[in-house]
Figure 1 (cartoon, rainbow, N blue to C red):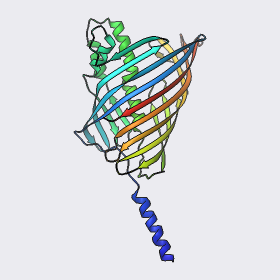
Figure 2 (cartoon, helix red, strand yellow):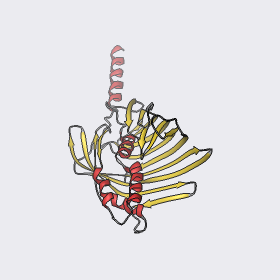
Figure 3 (spheres, rainbow, N blue to C red):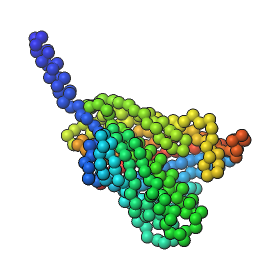
Figure 4 (spheres, rainbow, N blue to C red):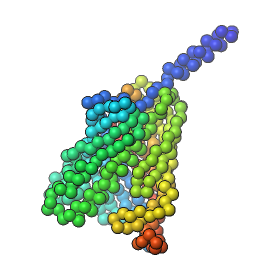
Length: 304
């Protein structure tokens, strides 16, 4: 009987261990991988007793060519294949699409120009983004079409950087990829991590993951996240204004991962953030403006 109990215990351990899986990026040098993203955001703000509601959508198709792998870091050449952006604030709409051919649509022309040049991302096998290099891709925009008024062009490039610049790309990429456990896992296992998002104010994201499903083709990971901005006592200067941002939020996510490559096949992320923006004229002056805001958004990613 004792031997039988030991044998059963050994078999149970073996079965349990056999279902454990290493989940990490396992990309092939020379291969391209793809994502098609769609982001929807509703931002509400209150200013002098009046509410301003902005509905924002943006996204497009992105390709990731694996140029090389050094140790555990993949170096990717990334291209925007298509891009779109739409902002509607209290009925006033701005929209642009890189596939739109119209010489009078400056913003669409700038998006189209962004699709012509690659940029570079270095990412660890656990999904942590080491570096994003996009200097040249935006520098090219300033020299593009000298007939566009410089002030108008600079304003539009600044707006594009908020959605597609280095900080935005690093943050959106890590929200999607910084999910892999550092040890083999089986269904029901949990793990945690903490990442830093370099937004305007700086945000820390605390994540808890659970392996919901594991089969021969894919793994499904669910996560719950909390975000909190830095405890900002000082103001920062942005476009000549002294501003301070504070926020807290939460996020729920589901990721479907290819079991062999580790590449994300599908993902759905839902976010909710609230906070306060403050403004003053000079460092020593009093706060002249406080703008409470709420942000509700979703991100859907598919792999072509």
